[in-house]
Image 1 (cartoon, rainbow, N blue to C red):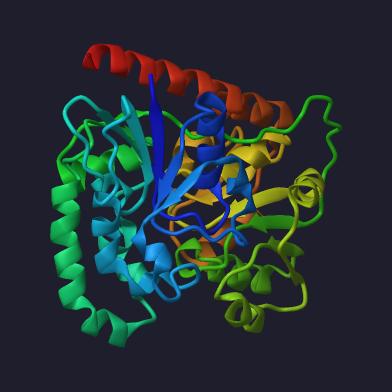
Image 2 (image 1 turned 180 degrees about the horizontal axis):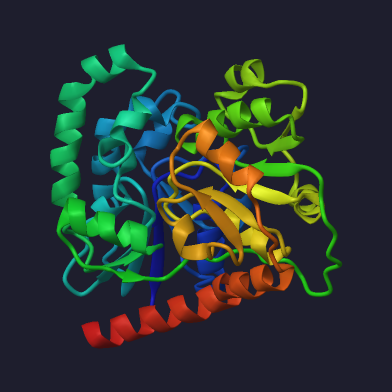
Length: 358
């Protein structure tokens, strides 16, 4: 069985990129097709045979792919997959637009239906009223195109029930669920309580980091924030001295903060949220907004707590009324999302789908 992988663009590192690395372990000979490849920003992709689209040769694509939304679909359509038995697209955008012949099975591992066109449209343009207005014709075209290409995969796999529901709502299509892989804590942990709260996140609008900053401004409790993003300056200006911005940290450094914190905070409406599972694997509870994929991975009152309104006051009230959590319950829950579980489940799914497709 000859396999190829397809991904929207290779220019950063996050949860989706961890999925690709896990797929590489399952299918080590599979090349990775993508629209744009930035070797400096994505050194993790050195293990792949990366094959880029014509967009790679245009001005600025490595750092400003946003200028080419109308070309992303045609870029993926230009790839030829005749030699492959199975093609797996990992996508939250246009990688699913690839065209395969009847003998090739196309499986789409859907991170979410194209967010900035659909579920995340209002939030994406919340601080860009002029861009929202002038981009309406392009957005309308891309929505129609997205609806058309949604029917190209032979099967959909969602990363969570939340994403499964979106696939049904926006595309009218059924999907199966395979939760993504998470790097869990190693065995032999020593539990210790922490005095500070922790956020590990990109600093972008949909993560709603403004909520915990305003909440902790009121509480006066210590909050540490790991991550970078375009909102860094804006968020720093909001924060009082009890809130510390740590910027980028290596995986090893993040682990030390997980071990030392009191709890991890998640305030966005997430598709899945790997951080919430990572935190639990270290025996740490999660305080999260009670919507989205995080509600599937955190057990209320057992491995964490939910606040029900996406406001600072709602978060403040939850933090003031925290109950005791058994660290071992967090660890046990996190084990359901291990790398080993993902690789076995995904490989079995591909083999079964291919055998049924023959």
